[in-house]
Length: 114
Length: 114
Image 1 (spheres, rainbow over the protein chains, first blue to last red):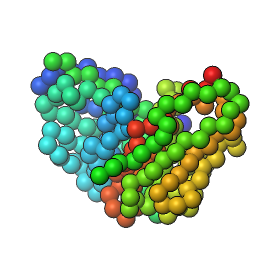
Image 2: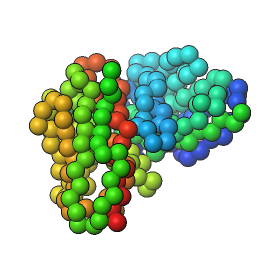
Image 3: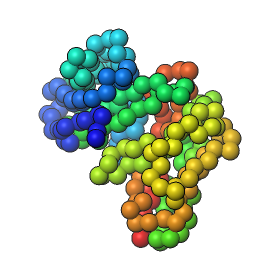
Image 4: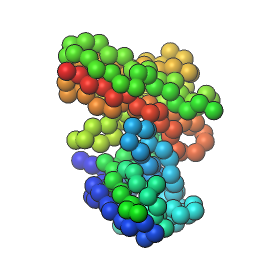
């Protein structure tokens, strides 16, 4: 049973518009959430994160929103650029054995059209 | 500054052969993770180490899989004997457990078992 779900396998957006990627989780013990971006033939790279004590974190064009009561987070990209085209993974983690161990969603493929 | 290094980048082998994947984490990182990515199951954590000690190997699919970390700068993931269903992209990631929660991924090894 998936603890972290990204229900949209793909998303297509026009350049300059907003991209909204969604993620739902089931485990209330998760207390740290991350987004990773992955280009073909490369490993995932960290994009932005949020602690469970916050409901919003912003870094340039990227903003992550956390709704703990709904167990839902989203990544907003404004404005979207063609270079943002990639697979985006949501991850939720809790501290186990001295490390934060993430559980990943299956990813959403974002295509930004020029 | 070198990131996580994985070798080989691509491996094609025949069923029944032994396969060894290698990983060099980022210097100074004390946590190391092995992941497998498939279309069906997404990004799965296989095993992770803290300070060279295996902490959780519950994600290792079968006894055919084994992982070692003989020192802080090297880890291996071995599959013996390999089977076609092991075909996937295998990622190694490292992090500093007392630092941020993000992991740094290597470029992955694409394994094809014929």
